[in-house]
Length: 84
Image (cartoon, rainbow, N blue to C red):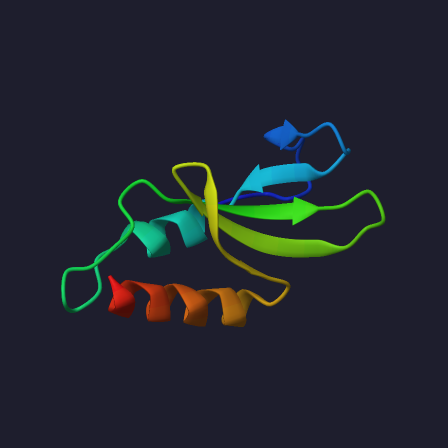
């Protein structure tokens, strides 16, 4: 389980804090009923210096989904898997 109160996994040059979101990463990598998944994707929770938080999913260092809502990011991942 990811504890977002712990030290971030990464802080970029702009001061944005990044935590690997293990639960969502597992969800993104898990095949859907058609066997489609993002095998190398990583899900992140990020916090900007102004306190704004969001969820980002990257694959090969490219952002494939982003949302401030956990439910919305899950739905986006489901749609992206269907499009594979």
